[in-house]
Figure (cartoon, rainbow, N blue to C red):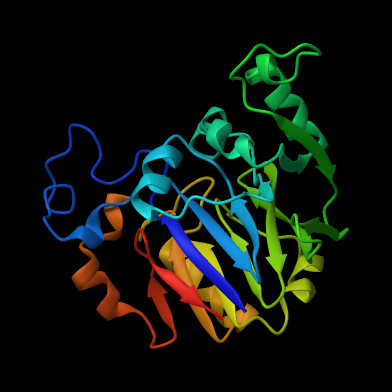
Amino acid sequence: MMKITILGSGTSTGVPEVGCTCPVCRSRDPRDKRSRCSGLVDVDGVRILIDCGPDFREQMLRLDDFGPIDAVLVTHEHYDHVGGLDDLRPYCRFKDVPVYAEAYMAQRLRERIPYCFFENLYPGVPRITLNEVTPDEPFFVTNAEGKRVEVLPIRVMHGKLPILGYRIGKMAWITDMLTMPESEYALLKGLDVLVMNALRPQPHMSHQSLEEALENVKRIAPRETWFVHMSHHIGLHADAEKLLPPHVHFATDGLVINL
């Protein structure tokens, strides 16, 4: 059994955006409150965090489900996806936390938080182990009981920046994508759940617009799709949701998808 928890469904600024007085940012509908994009995937007790942004601490307090994290899958180096790595400290009570990233991303993390990777760590520093992964080459995540889950990294393009999406079983998580190499579409066949970014109705230089995301949904053809990484430009959730096909939805913070 797989349980996917949407910890955060918003773009890099979050929603509401600081200083904005638009109807979405002033909305009292909790569905219009979006923290930075992240998810927790539990596969038969193997717990996998996808990205660890600056809202991670608040997201996990809200979730109120303190348990081991068996892997952190990093999609790319931008702050809204890695800014919370220092807040993994409490989870090191269980064991060192393995972080999986592409080679260039792993190097960026060593540069950004070098104190986590010194030979002699001072007390209280999160114990993070970096594991380098390669697009299209699967690897396994294992929990303390020895259960294993296969993870497949998938190449996507964040504008001109090569980043990673991840497939776990019949679920795939793709965020910050503008385009995808033609060869990767075959790796997304047979999905039951697709979690994918849809920034706003208007085109963007490095993110899919809503129209572009819907075109990719048609091509990938999952059973159900949940959009994430939305900005306030997506509109009020109550109105925008009505414009989607029946099998496509806007995710919300705290949403749980069972598979």
